[in-house]
Amino acid sequence: MCDKCGGPRRVVACVFSSTVAREIGVFDVIFALIIGTWLFALPARGSLVAVSVASLLYLMTTLGVGRLISTLSQTQQQAFLGGFLSGSRSSRT
Figure 1 (cartoon, rainbow, N blue to C red):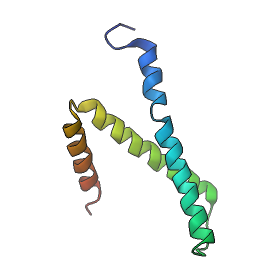
Figure 2: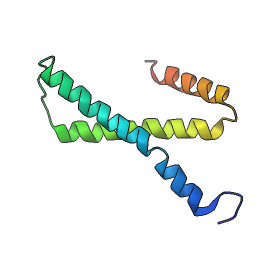
Figure 3: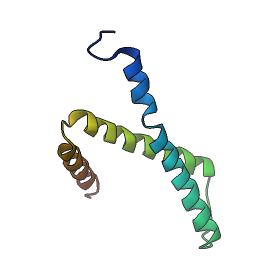
């Protein structure tokens, strides 16, 4: 790869830079399931595998959109507005 695009190190940095966010998201899902089940006595019906797969899919797509916005933005203000606009579009019905 050429020096301009950063080579293999840049790819590794891109892949592993979202690891912390991914771990926090997985922890949040597990924490919400535990608190909902134990503290609020909500029944956990259905497959936990399906919930896990759906949660991971949601986390990966959300992190991907965030990565896309940060790649296209040149300033922090553009990134903030891009995230705000992408969130407001997806919530319309």
